Amino acid sequence: MVGTLLTGITGVAAASAASSCRDVGGNIQSGNVCHAQTITPAYMIDLRFGTDYPDDPAVSAYLIGERDHLIGLAQAPGAQYLPYSMNVMWENYSSGQPQRTTLGPHTNAIPTDHPHGTYSLLLKVIIDNANGPVGQQFKAFNFDFDQNRPVTLENLFSPDVNPMDAIYPVIAADLKRQYTIRGLDAPSVRPPAEVFRNFVITDDALTFYFDAGKIMPFFIGGVTSTIPRAKLPPLAL
Image 1 (cartoon, rainbow, N blue to C red):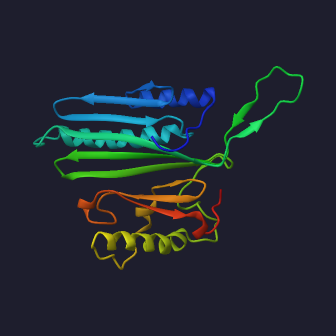
Image 2: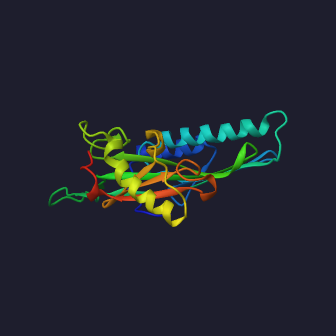
Image 3: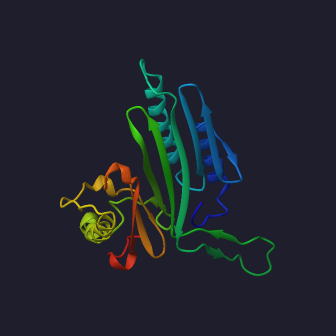
């Protein structure tokens, strides 16, 4: 696991995390890790993800959708090359530092740390089914504590900044370098914005994650591109 774990989530958040973990058929382990595993002759599913993300139901909803899709394929009449499989691991990142809250002198109350800045949860998903080669895909969730909202490509910058116009020239230069290293020709057409929705935020950079086959040939696997924040307009965080 990579990144900075946030501690001290509230009782409400902890209850939500436990509920969301149960929604995927899992159990909380090691304080903040949900593990769900199902093994049948038709499919094998192993999910591990951190439950510290503030909008945890969004995470479980995504995983339930991917899981149910795989199960539907595995249980379809005539399904071949069983069992199908889905494996999920996670990484988490943050920007900003916890804000120390003091309660003043002459009190026995314990000060608390209220998080601010951002928290990013990245899911790494490996799916193997008969409809295509084994592939890696990503799903990123970002949350801004200061504005109490998820961070998406649409609200990453101020409203007067076109997100794709801001990020693509920098990403394209980095991807061109990666194409050249691999002896490949970089595409001349800009991919749709949907391809750029999975990113994580740190103090110094944005890192974008691209599913296998979305940016480079499928056999290359998943691709990442890290862009220094100094090369981008100020983030609306």
